[in-house]
Image 1 (tube, rainbow, N blue to C red):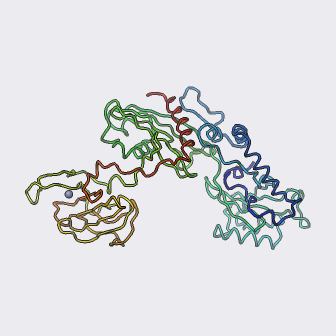
Image 2 (cartoon, rainbow, N blue to C red; image 1 turned 90 degrees about the horizontal axis):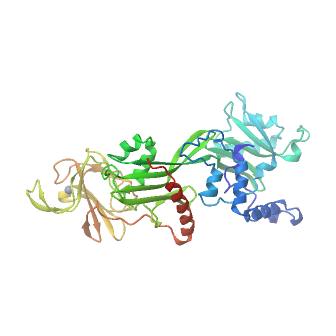
Length: 468
Ligand SMILES: [Zn+2]
């Protein structure tokens, strides 16, 4: 079977469109029956569907299992069955009902020539070529490229100029991850980009920490990309480069995606992690509220990400902390320092720590060139001693979290290039480094059950991780 035909269960059936039935006599309405069958099959228990999927999915992992290794190997079907929310029921794939022909493009061959080879009438050829042009930009085909043609089954027994097969769909590989499909429906040709199926292996790793996350993690043979993900996931809870103590440890459950034995892009993703830091256990659970849009949550369903950035820039050192009182090097007197000084090279980009509106952008006395951002009714942030502002930054402009608003300098009362950063909560200075920003989001009640089920399975997997 062609691998592209089973890929995207959520968009597979173009015939299930409201209103289709109205165009056909009731007694002949094949598509209504198709829909009913699809619907009934969706009511079957998950196990049955899971098993069915297993048979259609290619499992490239067969034959290379290593029973001695702690690594668990599952196909995507099995993962869906055990760990992920039940998949959207697979509609009867229209492409499966077709006669499939794979054509390998020869040097210099055009789409039109390919179609002619299969006796597609001239008028039809134009029709297909125009549609494909629209989505692909050009009908030029690279030599060696596979073109998959799907014909209406009864007509393509013995094609001839007298009785040509009716072309129903054309499909190309766009990349290792996606196929492009043009499919003839009642309302013309429909274009779809589909993700190819992939295998998923679930693995666990763990490490004890002595000095640093990266040092000890690499020593334990853990891929750097997983270590970065781990540091990022817990960035608000612990600074994994600085706050590590002897006796700390972590466990990671992650997935590795592959197609035909090749690792895919974004192949590794942490699904769950447990970190023991200074005797405290932190947990992160990956959960997708929408397909492909996931986030990490703690056991209470609170997102570990915050609506604000932890730091507004990449800095070399924190040269002055937030204090009620400190000795000022220029004024030579004790003054409170109501912000944090981040030393950084002149010109280092400064990012808005959260979404907001530019309230002030200009010269502000001792602050030099400074920007004030109003984030919401509660929070305001100030960025001082800037060398210059980013293009388009002026009062009234909306900025998004992470947007570059200006560059590090030493304007105003400053001894050297640094960013003086202040944060206000309800018009009061607060310490930007100790504020507990609100969580980005929480799991809403409607998703709570789904989240808890997933969390339970992930935690079981984590518990089974070997302790290194
Ligand atoms: Zn300062």
